[in-house]
Length: 346
Image (cartoon, rainbow, N blue to C red; front, top):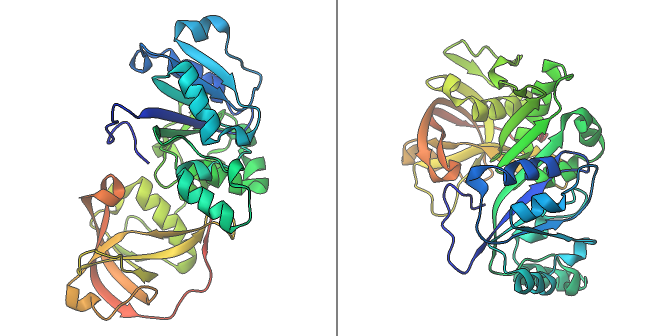
């Protein structure tokens, strides 16, 4: 997803800020707070598409002050290209904020209208009701707001919806965390990070952000040792913790079993060893792996979907895949081995 840090909009493009979350998660309060910040001020019109109305509301004075026009979207199918183009012509917005209904499917918005219409026809659905944005609307930032007090309920009953909201998110804010035990917050963090690998995760209480380095993490291996093995059942824990705290793994030698992925066009001295993970449900599988390097002759016998036991030292490199610095594994030993049948779970 293009973000404000790395994407330059053309003059004919309109940035779309998509704010996710279930009802009463705090989306409206977050948007009102953001609208009041100096960095978010705009001279032109902001079009606010409101997909559900909770306890907090937008008063007319606030909307007028920040040059914002509110339009209530009654149905999911209102997000079709024809309807949205009419709104664009009517209000000529400089930018668009969508307060999304967490119970609506948003995946179509990221796939583009032409591909989704073709897919709908293949599946026997009416293309008229496929969610699609006008070509000039660019999803610029996705932010997910979660109510920590009800997160357990949603993780147990609506995990697939959470996964959908996190898949493209750049930022995830979990508020109302005051009465949640630290061990529970660690569990939430691990599960949410697995579902939203590109999202910065913020935990908030009534006094502001909760420093995550103060939370206990009972790792199933001794992080203080210079070398250690990752058991198959602990792969997900290691992957998420290395993603969140890469500095404490730099220079460590780790051994783990993974499936080899060779990407088209990648250098011959690189593979991505990883595991398939069930982050939300059986229909939503994600490959979790880090870039790894070795002599091309060492990697030549291995193909995608081969399994290997790998010993590697963790380093950090600036990589396009990570959108900045990220873990890169220097392979010291690789041995072919049998597959692990079970998917990683969180």
